[in-house]
Image (cartoon, rainbow, N blue to C red; front, side):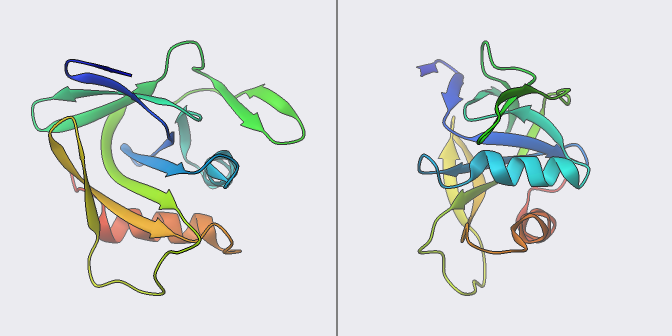
Length: 144
């Protein structure tokens, strides 16, 4: 849902080192599962399934979507509470996609609220997906 310089974006979101990582993909592909695995590795949940985004200058700030802050859907268990992390600037968008290329030379980009955000496709079937997500953030995410 868009409203001026604010939207609700269909993605889960975690904070790693003060940088927001959006996780998008089709329903049931593993967005919440990747978020949960990253939380287990020290990330902080910002929002699950849908993330509120707003523009501040040349940055996009991620925060929990209305009514779902502090909750994550854990398949087979339901909605469970997780202490939410702080709102923070979006550094990278990961799309979980089984057609992800084997390797890339540079990131793609997605325009969100008039700001170009780096985007990486990752296969959801990897056993080391959380590590790949962290490496993608380090290699392709917006710095600072």
